[in-house]
Image (cartoon, rainbow, N blue to C red; front, top):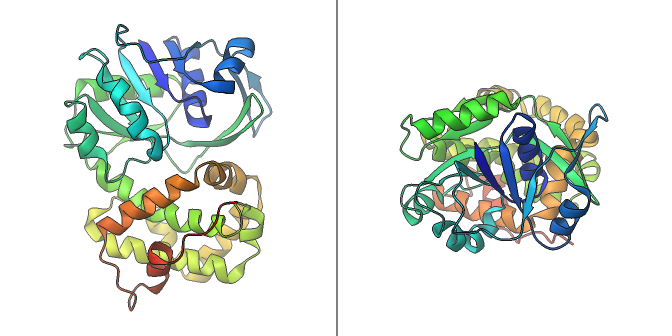
Length: 309
């Protein structure tokens, strides 16, 4: 397939590299220093677990050309950047299907309508950080690459994207309620993101904050409860949050105190505090906030936004 990766951050880089290595022709949209680095050095990926480095061949591009037709366009940008890229995406040929690959909770129907049905949705299963021009990444074993249509139907483009990701080495899963899955993910990630920002994006500092960790766990549990059947919560998270607060808090303390805390959560949170705020707004729109029954969630969603600097 001819694939355009819109976004050259950690997610776009890892998936573009894997797709290129599995035989697809991949162009990567980038800008500024990142575009210069891709042109000068190419794409450089390092598996943070093994130290293995590879340099898949991708074609860096500076603009989205309306003259170019792609079999698949993967949009791997932050939620707060969607409004900036949408006009250029609209100008692509009508046969270009577009996979929005990130935090699009509360935006799926708008994007589908704005792009006249060409949009479908998913979520990655990697984390990482960019060190200068090198992307250090980890695959998140508890998570699969998610894919789904806004109406829940099975389609040829969904089959094609799933086959491409599987062949590139990513375990995948389909959702027949991708908006519900994305809302469930927002309920999970917003309390973590807010807690991290209150510690200036430092996962180790959050791990050492016992009361803060307990508030974070309670807020997530309350968010899952408030969403009810509207959220599709992954089985591993459902199982985790059925356990007592003490057990869940200990689990997150271990995760956040080690390399996973930085690679799974903290690096992205520092780079995208605006996205955490946007996801909090999406979650607020989806739930009725009751400070009496969900005080920790109410504090996360309506309290003063933490500084990120």
